[in-house]
Length: 166
Image 1 (cartoon, rainbow, N blue to C red):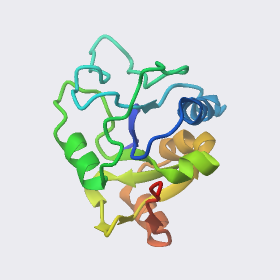
Image 2 (image 1 turned 90 degrees about the vertical axis):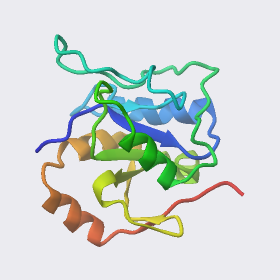
Image 3 (image 1 turned 180 degrees about the vertical axis):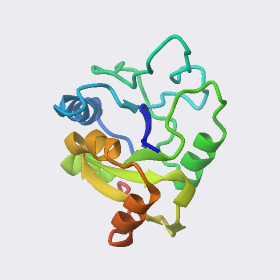
């Protein structure tokens, strides 16, 4: 089964608006995607999240420039909190059910996104089985994932430690 955007993107550290805009724009500008595939939650409430619409071909994520007042409600939280939010989303929320992205300290340094899979989220002291990708490659990478075999082979060789400021 192919992945279905938009994908949730969680900022676990306080990043500048310039960094958030840059990450979102780089992901958008990939020629094989050229769409807003990442949704950056601005509240813990699901009301602002993309909603399923049977008349629409699909929803979009968060376009740039982001609202200057946007502040991630996930700053200081961990992967368990992110997973609980995704698992608790109502059926009406149109976000990919299996894959999501994390912005941590690495995003502020190099513009990379940690891509994780919800159903196989293994966390060992904030070391997650995630795949780190440049923002510009992230959406096309997710578009190419069409089976669990792909993910299992990829993640077997990669283990990523979340990096918080401090």
